[in-house]
View 1 (tube, rainbow, N blue to C red):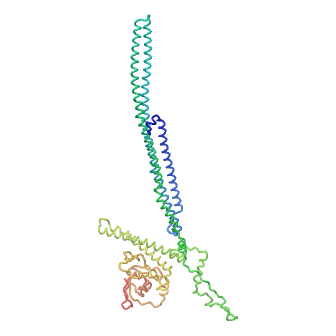
View 2 (view 1 turned 120 degrees about the vertical axis):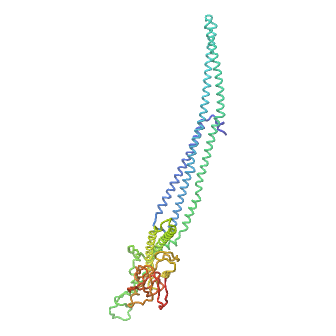
View 3 (view 1 turned 135 degrees about the vertical axis):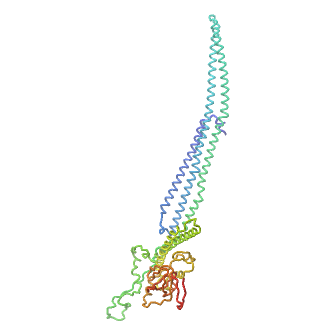
Amino acid sequence: MSWGTDLWDQFENLDKHTQWGIDFLERYAKFVKERLEIEQAYAKQLRSLVKKYCPKRSKDDEPRFTSCLSFYSILNELNDYAGQREVVAEEMGHKVYGELMRYSQDLKAERKHHLQEGRKAQQYLDQCWKHMDNSKKKFERECKEAEKSQMMYERLDNDINATKSEVEKAKSQLYLRQHMAEESKNEYAAQLQNFNAEQWKHFNVAIPQIFKNLQDMDERRTVKLGETYRSFAEVERRVIPIISKCLEGMVTAAKNVDERRDSGIVVESFKSGFEPPVDFPFEDFSQNIQRTGSDGTIGTPKTEGGKPDPKHPISRTKNKLWLFGKKPKAPTLEDLSHLPPEQRRKKLQQRIDELNKELQKEMDQRDALNKMKDVYEKNPQMGDPGSLQPKISETICNMEKLRSEIHKNESWLAEVEGKHGSRGERRPSADVNHHAPHGRESPEGSYTDDHSQEHRSPPQPDPHDFDDEFDDDDPLPAIGHCKALYSFDGSNEGTLVMNENEVLYVIEEDKGDGWTRVRKHSGVEGYVPTSYVEITLEKNSKGAVTYI
């Protein structure tokens, strides 16, 4: 079916129909816009919800329970899901709504053009009809005037009283009117022929072509609507796989909830490390009263002076009764001694690990600066090697500070781990630093071949380890001497301060704990790290050997 042949006389109705089609397309575009606004608002609300229930946390507040981790995993998946809703809104806005609005503008311009052509054709046909009608009316008037002239001529010609001049004048007027009527007739015939030709051309060529163009335009509009309907659904379909993965991630997070592990984390988080208190002994204050009764009366063992046995655990536990009551608030101390032993150990170990990471960064920076300095020295045109020295010095200074902090925290860790008592029970990790192998890093910073010990500082002795070792009145004889390779601050009790290149007497060898007992020329004795000195024992001493 063709609009040009079947609807040749329905110009006004086609005008209304094409306008309705464009209005419907814009109505659908408005629907898509409201839908994508809903998607945007939904995604925004989801992201706000995730942000509300997943606030920023410090590193110490990071959740460790599987139920919390799973919940935060679900929040992350929900955040990704919100992102997919944003993708849906963006695709709808670009591929559906935007395309519809652009197409609507094109349709309006095309429709306007076709309708203007139709109106122009109709106006031209109306103009031809008007010319034909005017010529017809003129022909009619001229014919009536010619009939009047003929009647006048015949009346005068039959009138015997009329003069010859009057008859001739009437005859001339008749000939004139007849001539004008003939010209009007010819003009009317020409205009009629022209109008009929234009009318045929209008209804058989111009209007069918214009209506066919309108029909093509309307059919393309219908096809475009179908395509955008499909695009509307495809936008949603494309994100379904990713949304499915988000949902699968939520299910996996739910499966990762482990009640046993959470219970273990509770134990790990709050375990104090204290031993449960033992029974309180009976304290008999009647032992000094003279007994008069039977000697077989059951009594309690006597202790000197009626005092409780100082070796009994009561002396160690009576100050820890807060375990079963309200724990007193203690100020935060640098060595974390305000914490229970187990919690203190974990915090100290965590602090040592962080310091080691910072030390590694400083070492990497120092190495990079040294390499750059070598490049500048070999290629002076690339830069001044001296300009890097302040930065290298600053890095080495930072490394020394970090080593000092690690040294201090490791001594506290050794204390809390209970590695004290006899010197043979000190931290076994000290054996690692007993001898500094060739290529080992010095405190000032150079490469080491033993990566596992790269950040370890010499273990610090427990102050109580040395309390009883300096009580002898007679000084021990020197069995050798040693030279300090590095400076040592000797900040802990029982240790000795020494400067680099200082020569000391060796009075007791390293017993395997990483410490050597030495004496200064002034007679002051103490322990220094074995890896900090170069030891030379006397040849006549037992097991003479040189440590470097």
